[in-house]
Length: 302
Image 1 (cartoon, helix red, strand yellow):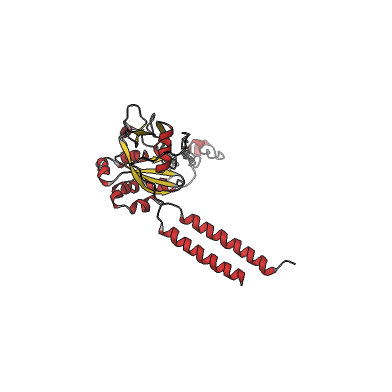
Image 2 (cartoon, helix red, strand yellow):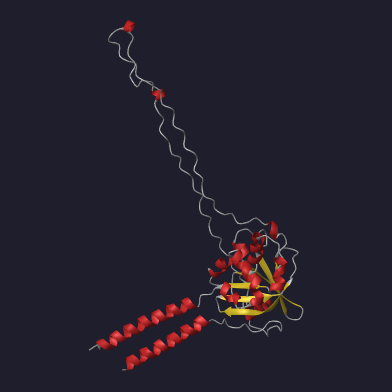
């Protein structure tokens, strides 16, 4: 015979486990603004992400790599419009997860590889402006550059700032990637609200100050009826005009990077092992899970 208490305990255990797993998954969601906020030397880059609203686009992604620069390197963006800054920073957001280990494998397996950025997904990129080249140069240094023809590999990997496999990786580079012609690239079209056209004016009604129907003349005959008003004098009804609404723009699909990955070689001296993302909320969540699990097991034993 089935023990009712055992069945109830099993169901309760499953419900608690599902709840705790959902809570833990929610706590692992990243926020690029808070993540970079732990590094004062990245405050300028972080502020630009907020001002251009790129932080929201990054947080909506599930697999992302952000190339950041420190305050001194970000000073080269000063004086540019927010529209241009947004284009440049969009090139620094790779639509895949690359920590130091994975980026080293990529550059070792292929001398030069190409990765897709958020600027390519925006639909504003011209030719190869939305792609980055990654290559191994000098004595094991990893460098980044625009895939535009003639562009140089002007930015080198400094270190890993944070990593949360396989959701987000933040890598610091020496300078903003230079993309020839990006400042003149068209901005993404923004949907505009349709303006309804003006309705036709009402035709004026015939004026009759006396308000009485016209009477027949004495000389025209006693039984002659009054002439009916012309239909041309009838008021014209208002005809509403339906405003055509612009269709919502279709979201751009990111281009997948199919670069082959080989076995991991020794890492370059300039790149340290990627630190695991420190998140106090995750630690607290883990402690809660441990306490609840221990209490539940104790209750099941008793």
